[in-house]
Length: 218
Image (cartoon, rainbow, N blue to C red; front, top):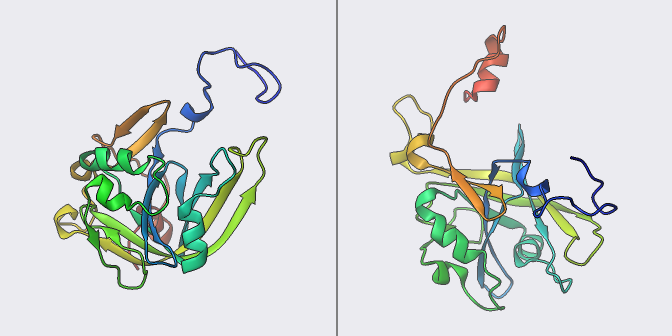
């Protein structure tokens, strides 16, 4: 089976595009606007980009009426955004925060999560989340779509501060991923969480290369 998106009719009942790049980590992004209104929303197009310095990105499609997402506008105007780790335990809160709430609604309150202050960023963190990045906004790259909803803003940021709860750190100084159970998107209405971890080391890697791949703090 093959087809050309935008040219051919998809031969399947559901498009396979969003369910091929999986699992996708959740960018649970909190921001604040000029009036001091907090915003919280999840994005399944989220990724780290580099480590020296640590940089990240999230991508947000416009609404079908052409409005840009609050997370994007707030990051641009405040100069900051915060990533909160989404977990299986927080899945219902993540899902509620994904709803299209009207202007002025506090998604923290609707999702039933607690605000925690950041050190540098003006936006709050999700207190119940086990890990957070305070990200200084760098730039936005807008990509044109075939429809209003197809337009996408790719937002880049530099991680200026990292928060991790002590209880999710193992004795050897790593995140206990199996205990955290990070949430990830599989496409359709399907999600997964990490419950199994296995290790693979690249043959021949040694010294600083091996340390870098493992993520040893230097």
